[in-house]
Amino acid sequence: MPNLAKRLISAVVLVPLVTLLVLFGPAWSIAALLAAFAFAAGLELASMSCGGSPAPAKLAVALLCALASIAVALGFAAPAAPLVALFAIAPASLLLFLFSSKEISASASCAAFAALGATYCGALLGAISLLYPVASLSCPPAGPSSEVGRSWILLLFFGIVACDTFAYAFGRIAGKRKLAPRISPGKTWAGAVGGVIGTVAAVAAFKLTALPMLEWWEVAALGVPLSVFGQLGDLAESLVKRAFCVKDSGNLIPGHGGVLDRIDSILFGAPVVLLYSLVR
Image 1 (cartoon, one colour):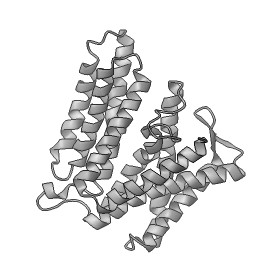
Image 2: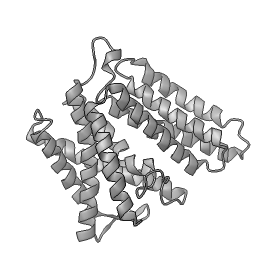
Image 3: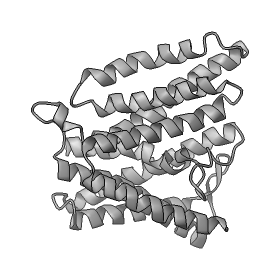
């Protein structure tokens, strides 16, 4: 089956499922889904960075990522949870590879990537949960209201999708000057501009539908940084893959590669939407 067909089929299946869960699922189910993504992304990162490590060590790194996601998700209900996770990440990562049979330098490198993964694949995903927190665990409920929170999450997802789509289209049509040829040769400045336009258009669509409280100036105030950080997230993952000479982070999603390949932009975009929703 052609790769494009696989990409389309995967998108047709995954996008409606995730959208329905965000629209109608309880807060705990959203947090659970994000923890599952954190586990899968952490496993992919561990497989790239610690390829020679035994499977239990890689699974432990993935579990650390999932636990970090859950800890951040409980930020409103249990404010100490993210702080405990922050203090635990470095010791847990170092202890995990302290008695590894690998060379000392390789063990230290694996421990460093385990700590990176817990923050990168775990905590950043947990930030999405804070847009629609597990309010039933806090009294009184904290964080955004449920319906508005769901809309913020969908804005994040579809803003990043629009960014990727417009960036691809603009890059194919007018892309000549490379954006970061050493890291991702296919990306162009024209594509980057197109990504910003696409994200701003997506935020405008949400202003007209699900988030009418946004002012028109906020469409650009949120859309531009969301697009910029989303594209930086894409480049950041490309840097990691290029460092380990791999094309895709995994093969879990047919036609798309791994979970980390699909959420790399969302990871950097999530804190942008969360902070904006809290301070506006």
